[in-house]
Length: 217
Image 1: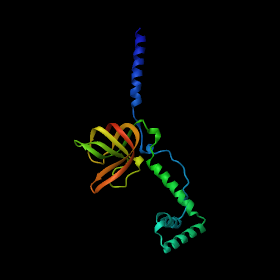
Image 2: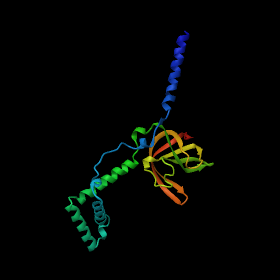
Image 3: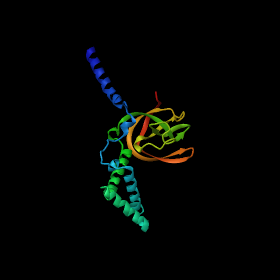
C-alpha cells in the first residue's frame, strides 16, 4: 500500500512540476533575434567604385531631381548613361534592383525571428532607461553593446528590445550588463531616448514584459 501511495504522490508531484519546468526561460543571444537570412542578388557588389559613383550620380539626375534638370544636367546625365551602357550595364534594371536590395536590407534589420515569438526567454544586455519611477527604470531599452545609441549609431531595430518592468530596476550606471527574462513578442515601437545633447528616436521590433531583471553574473 505504501508503495502504491508513493507512486501516486510521485505522479502528482511530476504533473505539477511540468508547468514550472515549461516556464523556465530559454537563454538566447542577440544573434538569435535575427530573422532567417533571405538570399538575394546584389549586382552592386560586383561593380567597381567608379561605376557605383556614376550610377549614383545618374540616379540623382534621373530619379531624385528629374523635374529640376537644366540642359547642362540633362547632357551630363546622358553622358553618364551612355558610359555605363558601354560597360555592359543597364541603369534602369539596376535602379529596380536597388529597390529590391534596399527592401531586403530593411527586412533584415527590422523583421523579428518568428521562432522566438511567444517564448519565455532570458537575454543579456545593457540598459538604457526610458521611464523612471522612484529612481527605478520601469521601461527601458535593452541593447547588445555598452554605449549603443549614446556613443555610437543605434543598432538595427531587431537588435534592441523594449522592456517593461513594473517592479522597476534600480539603475547603477549604464555600463553594467543585466539579464532580462520574459515572453518575447513582436511589436514595432518608436522610442524617444533623451541624451545629454538632445533627443533621438529609436526604432525597436521586440517588446518584453519582464518577469525579472537581474545583474549579469
